Length: 75
Image (cartoon, rainbow, N blue to C red):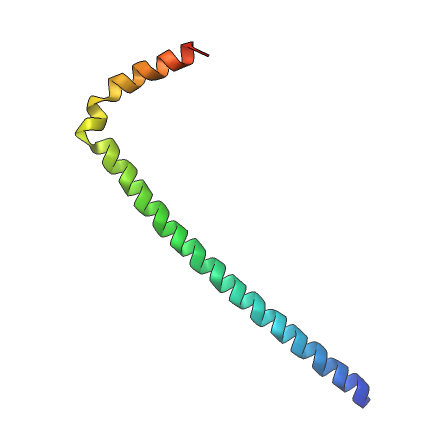
C-alpha cells in the first residue's frame, strides 16, 4: 500500500469516526427530548384525569352535552 493510499484511508477513517460521533450525539439529544416529552405527556394526562374526576366537571357534564348538540344542529 502506498503512502498516498494509506493517508487517504486514514483520512476516510477519521471522517467516518467524526460522522459516527456526530450521529451518536444527535441520537442522544433526541432520546433525551423523547424522554422529556414522555414525562410531559404523563403530567398532562394526570391533569386531564384530575379535571375529569372533579366535581365541577361532573356537574357541568349535562350542560356540555346540550351545548354540543346545539352546536351540531347549527352546522
